[in-house]
Amino acid sequence: MGDRSPRRLATSERCGGGGVVTGRPAAPVAAYERLWSADPAGWYATGVAWRGLTSQVDARAAELTEGAAALRGGWSGAAAGAAQARFAGLRSELAAIRPVLIEVDQTLAVLADRLRVAKARLAEAVALAERAGVAVDRAGRVRADPGRHPPDRIGPTVTQVSAAIGAALAAADRADREAAGRLAGLADAAGSGWLSPPAWRPPAGAGPALVGRWWRGLTPAQRRWLVRHEPHLVGRLDGVPVAARDQANRSLLAAHRGVLLARWSRFRGRPGRGSAEAALAGLDALADRLAAGPPRAYLLGLDPAGDGRAIVALGDPDHADHVLTYVPGMTSDLAGAAGELSRAARVLTRCDALAPTAATAAVLWLDYDAPDFLDEAARSGQARDAGPTLSRFQDGLRASHDGPPARQTVLGHSYGSVVVGVAARDHGLGADALVFVGSPGVGVAEARELRVPPGQVWAATAPDDVIRQARPLPEVLGRALLDQTPIGPVLRGYDRHELWFGHDPSDPGFGGRRFPSGRYGHTGYWEPENPALDGMARIVLGR
Image 1 (cartoon, rainbow, N blue to C red):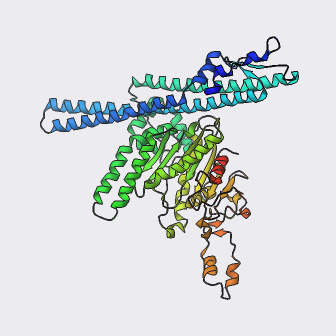
Image 2 (image 1 turned 30 degrees about the horizontal axis):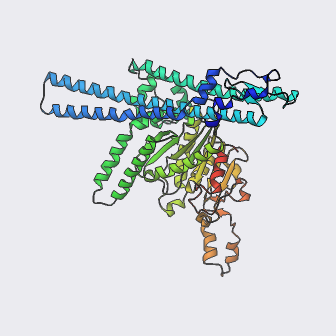
Image 3 (image 1 turned 90 degrees about the vertical axis):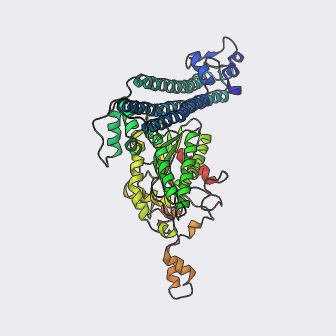
């Protein structure tokens, strides 16, 4: 911690002797010392190391498969059958290890993030003490000098600083105990092999609330059995905790890559090979990000069919104070998913800079068929199709969240804003705020039709964003072709704030709130120097 280490802060001696007013220690000396010396990055790296063992597990499983195939060709009889059964058993045991290693990584990543936030809160408490002119010693005790503080102000000042320090230490203690408990439970359960399949599954179309209740009613062994044996089910169920969905979907990565590789091979020398190759490269780029961090990435959904779909969270939404869901627009697909995820990452980075004492997560939601061409983007059909899926996903984030509800913000860019608007209008979104950038309209005439709290619909459109030209056809024709005809004046009277999909949400007449953007075109809202990036982050944080 540099100049904010406990020894640097042990300055109570300067307050004098008998004239010092001493507050209660916020916590035992050891807890205060331990939090200052805690290394969140070290815990994160330890989790990554455990997760890295999955590659060795996969390699051993592949060797067993190859060995079994080699023996199968030249060995028959009862002994051969027994050997093949043993090979199969060993492969199954290795496969069972994989989600355990990922769960250890998840546990340590959550611990690292919660310790990071707790240390930031402790630093903020010490900064408060410094501004107030009180001292904090190496035991975490807060002291004030009556010579510098009026008697009626000493008590409140000491109490405020002590409470802030105590809250930071308590948060770190909870994180430590919960991580230790989760790891201990994982170790204890390993002995049984998690051979406990549940008797019932939620029916198709079950809502996230029902799914969440079902999952909470399972034993840990049943949950781990499902992750291991039914990852396709667990990975796509809204309402299942983020950690379980991530474990399940990561186990399917190799199979998804195999599908794309087979598609690429089939298209050899034929049209379509380029798109298959791009999707394969996009999946590999996404896999690289899943292996990197911090923040840790959570794979909440992946489908290689068609243009490909992906849902990826940066940070754990189930333990965050603020959660952003970002819906990208036209031409979004698996090939460009890693690039779209980097936009969500930029908002998250700005949130962490603005509010280091808060836990924030950002989700890329690319679980719809985005338009590939302008003629598709001029229609709302794909947005209507996506609406129920986005609404259910947001409800799932609410259902699986641990602790007090997070502030949920949904951000749509370009055609993604149409998806967000239509979902909010037709199905409702589990969101506290909606944000539209570079929007061609959101399917409504007024902000109040979006059914979110008053004052929580926000929009920005860059002055040079080409989306400003997304006018209805009559107005375009009036301006471009018919200006000198008798009907021209009528067409010129068409509301210039009407876009393809309704009233411009960045127009004051829409009834929402605007935030500024610089001249960065249609795709530059996430540029570091664009004030729009700061605006998006502040909205996510509720500022």
